[in-house]
Amino acid sequence: MSDMVLFILIGLSAGILGGVFGLGGGFIIVPALVLLCGFSQLKAQGTSLAVMLPPVGLLAFMTYYRNGNVDLKAGIILCITLFIGGLFGAQMVQSANNDLLRKGFAIFMILISIKMLMSK
Image (cartoon, rainbow, N blue to C red; front, side, top):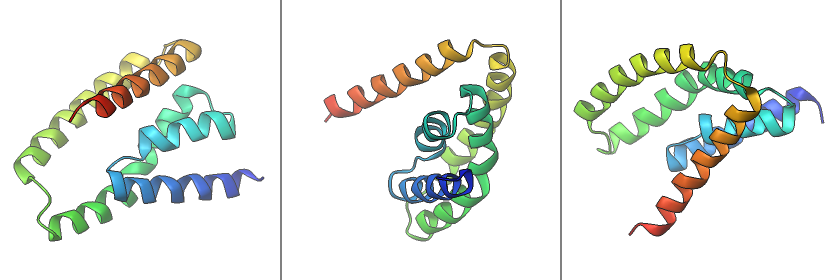
């Protein structure tokens, strides 16, 4: 399968899951780029950040907003702090070991999954 087809399938999957569950970039695009396209963990994370803002964020946000499912105050605060935190996180991770970063990412996803499964 060509890279172009993989990118299209990954993008469509992330877009659909982003619209349905409010996720996509980190949980779909990053693992797919690493496992299917051979990207390093760092390159996959950077690529995911580059693509997730306009397509998923804007159109999905507008749909949720029109249906009364957005807390603008929380969104603005989260947006500002995510913007600042994203800068610091990106700067910190640039020299990280790829294998350690990939394993840490996987452990994080497992822990979040367990927490969500166990909570009411």
